[in-house]
Image (cartoon, rainbow, N blue to C red; front, side, top):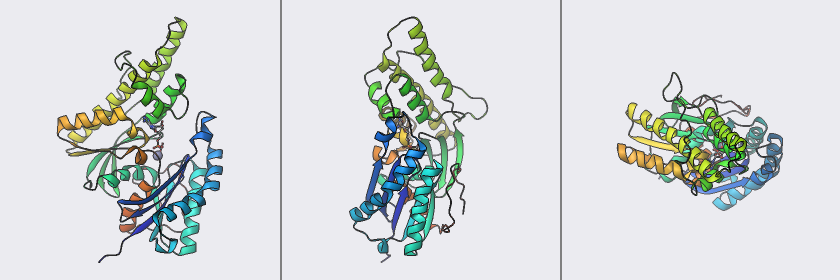
Length: 342
Ligand code: KG4
Ligand code: ZN
């Protein structure tokens, strides 16, 4: 009988300090997340310096808890996986230094993981039948990409945002209508009370690659609408704004994702990243996929936003492919998808 493989995974690229233990690539033995949201809320966004400081304070505790919950000791772990980019450099460095220290002390292999490849891999946790190739719509706070997942470690970007990421647009619009940080979940909730057809916000078309996105014009249109209402002393209905804005984002994301999946001859579409937990986006993609005969996959909300389980899954497949990083592994804040810095 083949021996089971256990990966200890660490994620600290932004404002979640997280650790997880993953068995054989798809089974989550533990998934511990310390969210710093409450701290950053005060400032209306993530403060990098505060994030790094909190990571260093919490990381050992989170790892200990992940091992305890999985009922594993460090000796029973086969490899240490860690996010080494992209993200906030000071935040990434905490996880990378921690993973290197554990790998050194235990003489276990170290596997660096790309954060976005981790988001994509989150789809493998609950969809045991999902295997590459498939198309993946990656929508997070920092990224909006359409990625062809050719293999567990092979990616081709077919579309990307030219300006703001989808999550960034959610956060900016939320701030403008007074919802605070983090904006995505708040817009999602408020939109349920509004009329998505109340205001007609633009769907940006970009020159060149038809699969690319642009969200800065939409964000400006919302701000202009708010200014005009203020000038004309018209009372704004924030629920209608949230619903109409969200509809504009979802419309573009769904149209592009379905078009790319069909035109590239793929039969499966997955969605990943923080914005993938948006209930209306999931409904819209599900409905469109059903219409087109495309199989649709998505992670549970817990695995959409930043977590270490997804890093453990991606780390497992990299480990199986023989990826090993040295103790000189560094944080790479602008690491590209599919790029491996050894
Ligand atoms: O993937 P993630 O946790 O961190 C990054 O890697 O960026 O994504 C965070 C982003 C934030 O912009 C947040 O507002 C957005 O995901 N988000 C949502 C929802 N939940 C989180 N956006 C829309 N609807 C949601 N329910
Ligand atoms: Zn993320």
